[in-house]
Image 1 (cartoon, rainbow, N blue to C red):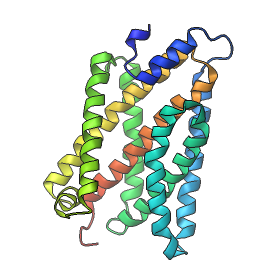
Image 2: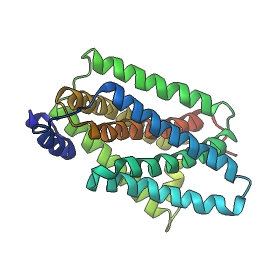
Image 3: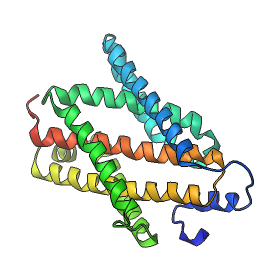
Image 4: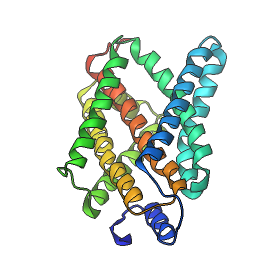
Length: 247
């Protein structure tokens, strides 16, 4: 059974769970914990809306939120037992970033936020149906391809970000409304949506293999992280397609 898991942490969890006797993961428990992370994210959005009244601090908190958004997932892999705490910080930080992004993108197109919400949850539902019906089959090859594509997009995004400290050429190319930027956004969005199938498969494995109940936090954190990432990518893409680039 263990050989079917491509994710190193899932392999480790599977090894632990084979000897585990006690309460195990359930779909209901995972949903409850996912809803908790959603709630924390909404609180983060509310925090940004409140902090708008204190402009000098908005940028500093935004930078801090970005740092937390990078560090928390890395630490959660190294210290999985801390995911309830790390996930809370991550959700709040991402909520703050979402609040900022929604306000900024809405300046170019007032309908960008509701449209992004509809597209995001439509993508989640459609991918769930495709996975549940067996149309999208998640095996080792699928996971390897998605992991490689995700890593490539992550590294490239990091290169673009670092280059922004030295030149604006790459950031201008990929953050504006040109064809190159739109194609890049579409491709990274497709990879993120396909990664949902991997999350669904991990959840199925967790429940069917009898992972300990504590691992519900890990599985819930994984799916919420993916949904947040998809929403931010959809938000940017919708703005690129219909927003006013002069704003």
